[in-house]
Length: 260
Image (tube, rainbow, N blue to C red; front, top):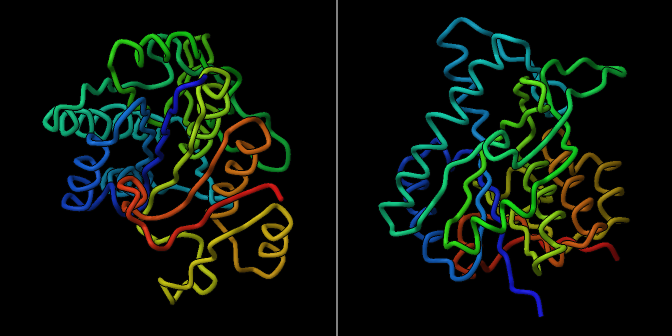
């Protein structure tokens, strides 16, 4: 019988809020069993890039990464944020291991092929090294992945953190019963963005397509949910979206995704 593995992706305003982040990391550290944390940090990267005189560019909710911005996101994601999160988890007696996809060749990717849009040094995942990640887990280490991958040719790549969470969850489902949780500042997918309690509790694939047509789901939420459904189609047992209370299993409102 497979063991349970919780994979949690954290992003949004929680990462930028020191108090909210500290509270979440304390709760995550107390989560029993095998677990992996994946974090974004685009808002912090945008702030630092702006301070350096660089103007980030977004298309369809995804960052366009030129050479200068690649340097910034690598410093922010793999350095500042990853090590700060890892240090706080160690403070909470969670034996965290801060990683990028480069480390131990954990996540191999390729530079996104240019079609209608050139996303620059954006990476699309080719392979997740499940054997190595499982070694970390079995030796009581909790992997903390940032959004940087590589192509094994010496090129760093900026890969959407939602995608990393989804791809790691899919790969690890061969070894574990995986639950994938997307945690951000909202209580779930909202019917009306102005009403924080208008959570759509259940979304299947058909409803997802309808909500996109209606404009209820748009911008950055589209790639997030695309990754969720991709995970469900490829073996992940359960996907939830909500705020930090998801980690403590105390959430009253959250969104559960299913194929049917």
